[in-house]
Image (cartoon, rainbow, N blue to C red; front, side, top):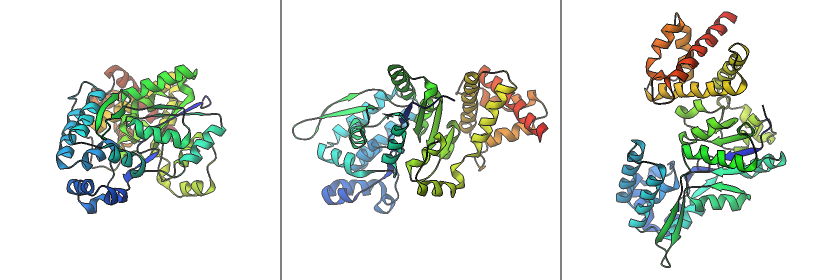
Length: 373
């Protein structure tokens, strides 16, 4: 595996916590605090996780703005927007319609979101190994500017920049696509500009919107992802200190973080060892190159996503990959295994030919383990 030269980070949920501080709102914006309590209830806010600053800003503007924002999100989820930028613009229009002020906006950007522990130490360790750091987020430029200035980042890509009238209301905006599939394109553009290959990059994030970028680069690390997003990351770590992402890269962490990580058994995901073994099988027994084997892992992830989308055995605590292994072991033949996977193989993620070829290889891999055992 090539040496890592570029580390690309997501922002919200990776560098910044999704939980928020609200003391500044109570003190400085009592009406907006009342709006927030009407949307969620004051007791809920103590542990509330906000998906993004976009959502928090709408909720601060009141229940009506919050309801319209939820409707826009559902429209986006259901494919009602032609692209990400259109959804972002509709969100900004809500901010403008309900008279978001620059004072409240700046307070949310600088006072609401807190960094995870270890952000500075993580960046220092990466730079000590000559690694360039970049940020790619579908969020607000003002928040990325804060991160960039706090940690001297040189490459930041974000979605929306606000421009303000003298009275503090929104005048206009600049919007550019920087989320979901666009994250991959921006990483690709940056790699080309810096003269690095994708095998020399690692992507660190937490959400489903990071999937395309995570699967494009040579390495990916999920930092506290939701369970149903675990399977497309090469490695998953869980905890409250970002330094934990250094260990999968082979870099030293502080003793306290290392001890904490060793005490958390869920930081090493069993699925990853299965994928690593499958890649090795593809090269040693399937006649594939390293690059081709990585493509097969991408196809395998697509099968798993289709399984999740079809809600296969949603009551089970087992991961989709664990269910796939069990199905392969239970199948009496390769053909019966493929037949049992007819829905995942024909699902929306990936081409059926690629997924079928991967499933066949996975069946052979699983049964080679049974034979060896």
